[in-house]
Each structure stands twice: as C-alpha cells, then as structure tokens.
Length: 454
Image 1 (cartoon, rainbow, N blue to C red):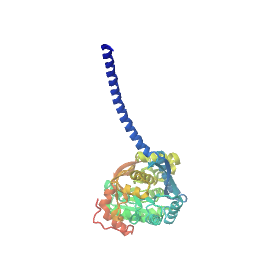
Image 2: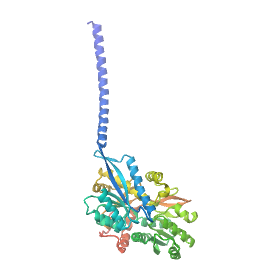
Image 3: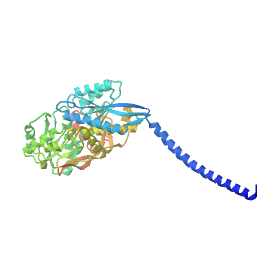
C-alpha cells in the first residue's frame, strides 16, 4: 500500500469513526427518548384496563306521584352525571376500568323514612349498590345508615345536606346545601340590605321541615333580625291566600322559604303579591319561569336564590362543569324536566369522583377517608372547601364551601350577586346553630367544644 493510499485509508477510517460516534450519540439520545417513552408507556400500560367492572350508584327520590317531577329530575341528573363520567373513560385502577351505573330507587313519596329505607334495602340486597345519594333528613338518613351498619356490604351515603346520622354512622357524609345554606344566605342578604329588620320564615310541614326551621332561626339570630312570622305549609296546598295573609299582615321586610320544590315559592309569591306584600324574597328552591307564569316580572325582580337553584335559570352561569352537565341533561331529557335539586346531585357525583381519584380505590371506606383527609378539598364545581362538623356530630364529615354562589334576579335573569363562605359562617356562629339545633332536638350526641377549632 502506497503512502498516499495509506493516508487516504486512514482518513476514511477516521471519518467512519466520527460518523459512528455521531451515530452513537444519536442512538443514545434516541435510546434515552425511547426509554422515557417506554417508561411512560409502562406507566400508561399499568393503567390500561385488562378487565371492566360496573359500580352501581343509587339515588333515592320519588319516581311517581305528586313529587315525581322533582324526583325524576334528580334521578335523571345522576344518570346524566354517570353518562358524562363514563364518556370520559370512567376510571382505571389496578388494570380494572370502572364505569358507573346510576339507579333511581323510589322513596315512596318525598324522602319519607319508610319508602326511602325500602328502596335502600332493595338496592343493597338485590343490586349490591354501595354508593348512594340521598336526602339529609335526620330520620330518613339515620334509618338507612343504621340498617346498613348491620349488612356485610359496605356502603357510603352522601347526602345533599347535613344529618344527625353523622353523629353515629361513619359511612355518612354530606354537602352543606340544605338546610345550612339558610344561615349564610340570611347574613349575606341582611348585610346587603341593612334596612331589613323583620323577617318571616316558611318551611314544609313535612317531617323534615323542622330542619329548615332550626337553621332559619339560627340565621336570623346571627344576622340580628327579628322573626315576626314562622309558618309551616302543606306541600300539596292549592289555595295560598290563607297561608300568606297572616304572614303579610306581620309586615316582614323579607320572606325566606325553605325546601319543598319550585311550586310553593311561585304560589307564595303570587298570593303575597295580591295581598300587597312589597318586601324581599329568599328561596332555596326557585324557578324563574314557573314564578313568572304567576307573578309579574317586575315583582320577581330582586329575589334571592340559593346555590342549588342557580343552574338552569335564565342567564345563570354555574361554571364549566355545571354548565356542561346541565346541557347534557337538557339534550337527553329536556329543559322542562329539570329540577333545581339536580344541581345537588351533580355536586355529589363530582365529590365522589374526586374521592375515588384521591383514594385510587372504589372501596367506600377508602373513598371517604381520602375525601375527608383532603384539606382543603378541591371540589370541581365550587372549589376549595373545608370538612367541618365535629362541634355538632363529633366528626368532620360535612363539606363546607368557601365560595358558594348567591343568585339574584336582575333584569329578568338570575345572575351571580356574590359569594358566601359557609365554613367561615359556621365557625363564627356555631354556638347559635348549636342552640337552635338543641332546641329542636336535631343534633346529638353533642361534643361540647369551647370553640370550633378552625
């Protein structure tokens, strides 16, 4: 081999070596990238389902009778939420993909104890339904929780309110809509309208009406206003003039109406209008379109609505999660079949899903533990919330929103008027609430703390 040939040969070898080194770097990068991808794939593979399971999620409310519209609205709200959850892929835990089957069980009336317990027993024994959305009426919820404690199948009861069952049964948790919302709402309204000095409170004469009454009384005392009329009303009443006449005669500056659906507020407002009442209104259940059929729009103007009735009202913006679910509901069932209490059901579904994801489990006890140990608990609909309640029930299983919406009718639309911090109100006024609940024998056993401790 000649010298020039040798030099050419060696130069070629150097070039090849450099190319190989370069390729080696590229290979290394690619390998690292491939490793990263493989790692991600491995992680993803760990969450890819190799089997599927269905979780039964029950709700107890009327399917027929006088309150079927409310009950079907709530039942279909749970079905809407379940479909949305399933359409998003459900949740995969340990290679098992879980979807939800929403089941609407009849309660035989409007959250009454006997029918509710019968439906609950059917769901647990026949369908192995472990997760439940139900009323927070004390007797009704306690009956179900007490029976569930004797069964081998574990359950988690999630109520749209607070119940004395919290004191005894660890598988019960609640969202503070009804009836605790009455207190913060009253304080908010009086602060916005300091001319309010006298109020009238109204609540159903049904078994759960006393819970409305107690929380309204606590709200009035905390706000520093006088109750000049306290009235229970028959949910099936058709003639509201005899009901409203003495209330209007008491000359309240504001009338606050508790639970019972959208019809009673509409009837009460129409009768009061004819009787000459010109004060303000606050409703738990309210439907602008229903009320507008019976009263002039200018008379409805300025009425306050609590959070649960915000969704579905003209002009109301409940946020992306609520708005999406409401749209899905109306597409499936129609706007005329919506019930304001459906908002509570959406909130329970979102609370459950958050708990399941935090727990990475569908075992009721683990889901509950994950929820109550999240401080704060970031609820997808109303944001950060606090778990409270040990002052009354010895356990912090009540979710208190820190920024709950207040709606008000303005220019023929329900619009956001402001927010209230349920947790802060509870902390500030817990002794007033305690006195009201003791007076009506609603809570117990009591833990006599000198302060809430928050």
